[in-house]
Length: 105
Image (cartoon, rainbow, N blue to C red; front, top):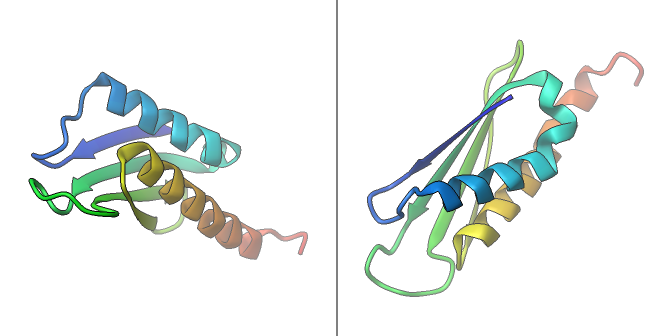
């Protein structure tokens, strides 16, 4: 499973951001790793220079083998919280989708 991290112009996509993003993805999606080709993480500061609650948006898009992309997003006050929330939502969506495809149901 490849993990790709993208940031907007207001978030500096340094090594630390990439490490935190990869840790969040692996923590929640590692059990699906053999069924995913890639997970794309998009981080955006929705308020740019302004401050306020829930201004960081994380969108995660998983690319399951043989299926169309499945995405989830979350808004939070900081990058780490947004990453964790989006990964958790994506885990639930992937779990539901793979459960529907499971022949043992």
